[in-house]
Amino acid sequence: MEALAHITTPEFAVAFIVSFLAAALHSTVGFGFALLSVPVLSLLNPLFAPVPQLLVVFPLTLAIVLRERHAVEARSTLWIFAGRVPGAFLGVALLKLLSTAALDVLMSLMVIAGVGTFRRTAAREIVAGVASGTMAMVSAIGGPPIALLYRNDTGPTVRANLGLVFAIGLCITISVRAAAGEVSWDEVVIGAALLPAVWLGLRASRHLIPRIDGPRLRNIIVVVAGASAVMLLVRGLLNW
Picture (cartoon, rainbow, N blue to C red):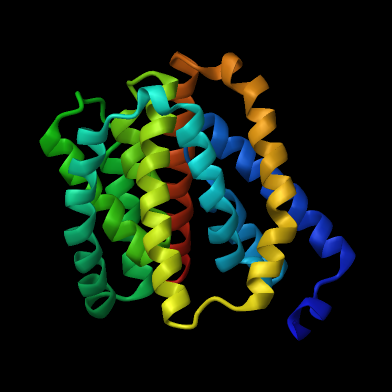
């Protein structure tokens, strides 16, 4: 665990606060943990992301699904996963065909295309799954397309179904990384140390949810998804 010696107390304090804020956002809105925490913590110290964040967001998503289990729609999530598989393969193909800058711009346009209001159908769930799978493979940000798909549903429905999709996806991602030797004990220890911050964020969401469920939640989903699109677009244009 030599790498742990390279983390200072101020760095850990910042990582704790960022993880708390990301968990509170994710637990309240249904997504956004990686969008907030991974870019910030990667700049702070590469040891904090992305693996430790993957490890801590997994139990968070399970807790959200358990909390909102009455609103889970299994058929809907199955359609989304039917799209995520080909979306992942599409992402791999795009990685080989396009530059990183071009991919960022393309991913931002995919999110922007989903901002329009529409009714959720099986076909659109599959399309959102494809977009999510592609974005997750290319940019590690796969939440916005699915969140936009559910934004006109109730808060529990948004959080429960996004949580179920993320939990299954994270289980696959973490398992593949571990099998490939891409998860170190240092990263496991760092993740464990940040779990209290995630738990506190989950607890804080209980006070935030009553304040934002309803029209405010729909607006927040669009804002957070839009922020991800802007971030990707700016990064792509700067690196073009």
